[in-house]
Length: 296
Picture 1 (cartoon, rainbow, N blue to C red):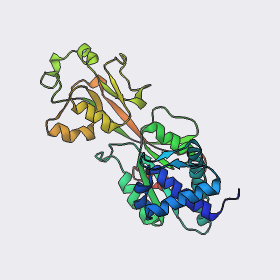
Picture 2 (picture 1 turned 90 degrees about the vertical axis):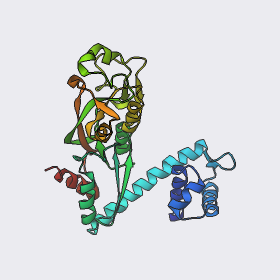
Picture 3 (picture 1 turned 180 degrees about the vertical axis):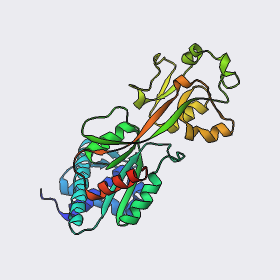
Picture 4 (picture 1 turned 45 degrees about the vertical axis):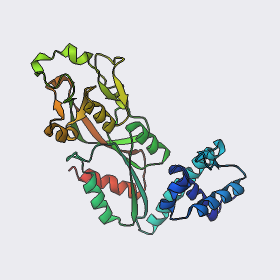
């Protein structure tokens, strides 16, 4: 079938519905009524000759063919946006989208220059639409490779081929326990290493190869995918864990966390800027350069 402009519009509506997990939630993003959105999806189903989703009292559910159509549609929309940006660059205009994915819990990090870079970039390219998302390192790398994001910001222990990385700064981490943990009221000198190693820890899953305890994980240890989740588990008092010092600082000041004086467990987390290897559109290249210059 020959794809038309109307097809592109219907696929973009379908993408919004899928990302928002239903018609109602997509209304605000699309600025359309629910009946209009429903009519658009019906029109796309008739155009393609397949059932895209189940909707009704049971909620919204993609069919298998609907999932495949969504994947194809997203790839088409991303490609169209990329080529549109290239065409605009031929006219000397910086337009289009810039999709940035970052790890969570970095807003309290004074060494993070991402806000400053966004401010400077917006002054240079006000017509570019910046999309900022939070994800874990593995998903950021996957997004860079499949084109669903353009630039990643975080720490990437297990790099894959096809990506270009620039080191930015080191984020200090330390070992913490909560005020409800048995270690909190004990002097550091009274807590032997063996007891620290035996107590339950909470780790980030993407550290499984390089950051896990040298003495191995135990059945009582827990794995999370985000820093905020790790912080919550430490605050519960049931686990200890390595946290960014900037994130723990306010909780430490309130007396809810205690930094444990066991330096051998602490480390510096290398924060990095990452994108696909090879030539990139000017929009991506400009933001990359802008952020790097913030660290000069």
